[in-house]
Amino acid sequence: MNKALSLLAALLLAASPVRALEWHARGPRALGMGGAGVALAQGPLASYWNPAALGRPTPNTHGVQIPFGVHAAITGSVIEGAQNLENLKDRGTAPTQGEINAALDKLDQPGSGLRFDADLGVNVKTGNLGIFFNGSVDAGAVPQVDRVAANTTPAAIQNGTNNSKLIVKGANIVELGAAYGRELPFAQGLYLGGALKLMSAQVGYSDYFVLRNNNDQDNIVSKLKDGATKSSNFGVDLGALWDLDRSFGGVALKPRVGLVGRNLNNPKFKQPAAATAAGVTGRFAVNPQVRLGASITPFDWWNIAADLDLTRNLTPVDNAASRQIGLGNEFNVFNRSWINIPLRIGLTRNTAETSAGNVLTFGAGLNFLHVMLDASAAVSNKRVVTESQGTEKKIPREIALGVQLSVLFGGADAEKEPAAPAREWKSAPPADDQPASTETIRKAAEKAQEDLKVEELKRAAPADKPSTTKP
Image (cartoon, rainbow, N blue to C red):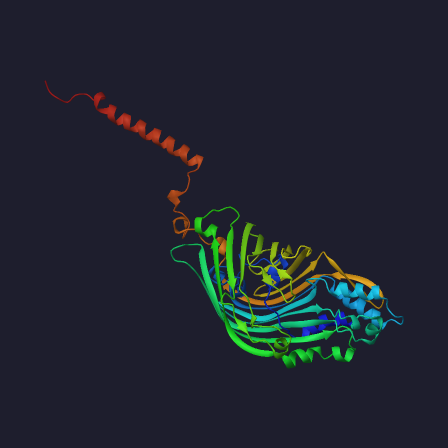
């Protein structure tokens, strides 16, 4: 396998250090809806998307969700440049200086790099309380080009003495925590929540030399693991959710607005020795993230949601930031308590990258009784050039996959909850309060006329009787 492409496989197996994290579209429901989940969060995964939603009455309140997801993105022409440089080394004829410079230029574009993230966890919810055990990997590879004149000659390229490389860095973070959300007693429809979590991070750093032999490159996974530094800290998340229909009652489209902040205390972890030796200063920081979300429900079977990153999040690739905006739809086929097939489609875009393009998302699920299986995918409309066995190919610059198994029970349908105490019917209205029919009104009028005639006859009767008084 081509060494540049094999790096993506290496990232799947090992964590490496990043300076910060971008937002993960955790769970196939949100992934399939363009990465939108802050306002529409429900069930155990609300601990991640918006802990305030743990207090909102929704179907399937109690249970467990096990999500798994992967996401990979290619920024710039890093793969094309690495492949071109490798091809110049492996071909039989000596490369020209122009070919060498062109390959190095492709590899050296600002913001070029590879990034990868993955999630796997177990999330449990009972009542308003959520407990979670989640692991995530955030990794990236950033090119560093060797421009030393002696190392850019045709002979240096053929001999593999050019030290152009990809710096592989990232973190594997495991979180164990609890979240709680509730409705404010003095503000119906307004929910607040938070999560406190213990965080254990393994941070690594390694080099991937483009022109070294395959045996050296095969050691990248072991290098990352052997050189990783492990440390612990804690994180704090806070969320808010406003259900306008529940607050005011009868609001069209049943809108909801949510706001969540993750890792607001900016937890930091130790850097590995390899990173320090390479001049990386300071500690590895998981910077705070803030995201805004909104949703509407035009019908009971149709949900629309949108999310926007309010923070400009860093990524494992230097000079490449992430600020996502996403919009998605969910259509529930059957939409029954015991069976449902949700169909999802959406669109997301990284507004921090002008050339990022749009990412189409889609997914579906099968909910039968208490067992639910969901899957979603995302693919970019932009392509990057690769080469395999001499044939040029184009692949999506960004892809993502997500699956989830859920077992959920109980709960109330929030869409059928009373909007306000003044409008609440605990039972059917009394019969006397029901509107009278036309027939009932007609019969009542006829009876009233008959009663009036009888009363008039009674009044006239004494005048017609003979007098019994003697003269």
